[in-house]
Length: 411
Image 1 (cartoon, helix red, strand yellow):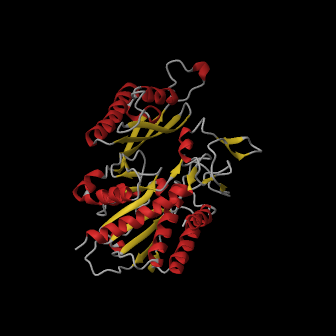
Image 2 (cartoon, rainbow, N blue to C red; image 1 turned 30 degrees about the horizontal axis):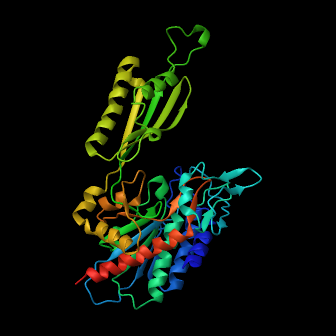
């Protein structure tokens, strides 16, 4: 299974599926179409049924039931795109056999080194087979590892018909990294009662709580006058924007928060004297605190508008997704089954909140309760990304074990 996973993952990783937030198509990039078509052919070749890809690039397939028990239809999902923050073109994965615990030279010419001095968690992977970048791109384990693990688990079950299971649906989706993953996902067509995204990080992660999320866009209009004659006339939009930022709590930012702590995150700041634009994301697990954060933004904007003029400050806030715990708690047994599956395989479950986006947040509110399972990667979205092939095997085994447990617990 290990070699099968490595080969699958590397094949997927070499397709540039970086998503584009400025595109209005779905998928947002042509590379995602390339991978979607590749996955359709592979699903058919391993023996999956009802294999489809729709006009928006959503790939779906069925593993038919081989039991007479009344087993709920469950689904497994992973996303095809990689993050727009770092290039996914010309990915050249490197395989490190029997990692010795020391520095890994990713790129000798450029002096790029993956070191346990910078990333202490590397110590946990001594003796593992690691897959790394060549230092010039991201790797794409988020979430091509999840695709490889789902595909390998389905192939295993097809090759082992003695393992009884209910109907299983799988889906590979576009544009998760730009927040659009479920926007055109057909829940009714998918036809699952419950699902799992295989989109988490290190071994054992099991997540059913996510942020409440919003984005805020602020436009500040200034008045540019020659600085030599500007007294009493110039209004510098950059300085007003700085004043806005300074009124937010300094330590309620990603670089100072963890666990269940929320934050304001300034994503971009583009400005001149005449006009400045700020783009924030707002995150909090608690719904009341989430609403309070949005209210704080509005309060600051109103205060500055009163000070500098109502026509100078424009604030637009849009909710993105909500904490999926609200929708998963009523069916908490799906989390318990995943927990049991990991325990059965001697994996310590690490139940924790997701401090990032996941398709499961939106899908849960679309009527498909969807917690998140580990895929095994580390250092997502950058040149230091890597994954343990050994832990990819364990992720595939967890998928198989969950499917087995649903059948065993059915009547």
